[in-house]
Image (cartoon, rainbow, N blue to C red):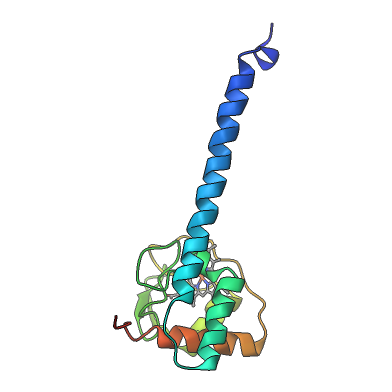
Length: 144
Ligand code: HEC
């Protein structure tokens, strides 16, 4: 009897199946939590609030945290005005132009220490403006 239709293989299928479903469930819960964290921030204007909504709708929060903790990409807390070292060894200050370029063409300037995994986004101008406003508000540490 070959290994493929061996009766014991079904247990292997069940085991692998349960592991994969748990990863899926835990992953979804994690992203749900990140979305919630982003929603709970205090913002003082409508544009920034729109940016906050976009950051969850567009899935930015799957890789970028808003509270300074480590994510797949750099946290947005304190990002605006921060000096980043790029893979090329050059440094750049995060401003509106760099933010815009990072959204449209993320691989052009990759931050050192992070994987080049962000895909380009094709957002409307008003959406980028809202995201920039949101990110700007996160430059100031949140006082609890
Ligand atoms: C799949 C994960 C992922 C998603 C989703 C993602 N990013 Fe990123 N982003 C990264 C990583 C990783 C980096 C750092 C590497 C690089 O520069 O490309 C990065 C870098 C950036 C930077 C430059 C940050 C810095 O500190 O220099 C900006 C701005 C940015 N992302 C904005 C966005 C926006 C806006 C969205 C949603 C519309 C988004 N990202 C969605 C992974 C992601």
